Length: 209
Image (cartoon, rainbow, N blue to C red; front, side):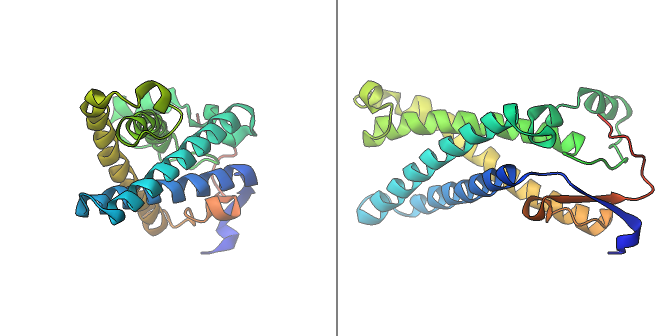
């Protein structure tokens, strides 16, 4: 990378990066344990995997609560307002072209996917807590749903749908990072490690909504 051709700015604060890392690790653990559980129908291995899966689910609930809180009270680029770009979404829909002007903060179109991912995560957290209560008599909902085994399919189907959507999001997210690095020729993936973002130095100084 030619550092003389890029402007660098500290965009993502440390709490946001820690929350992002926590949620990423928990999501990967949830996906892995959910996938591995398909190979074990019963016995100690299956019970162990489900216990880890449920504990990771609690971790996801905690991580989502932290992200929601920081999205309301954190600095500019941590707030959900930085994910809200209706003008860019409408312009892309109207012109059928992707925005090309780089900006500091979240990418406008990627933000729409991130918001959808948060909705899916919230749904998975809710259905996951319900399934922990219904199937394993565990968690904060066990007192209300612990004996309601008839609700299993009601919560299981949307939870499995969310699992598939979340796995797709992870794959799409990693692919988008690789494509940005390859064709955008900017170090994008490191932003959630260092907190720094880069954009061409001749770009306009005005962030686009």
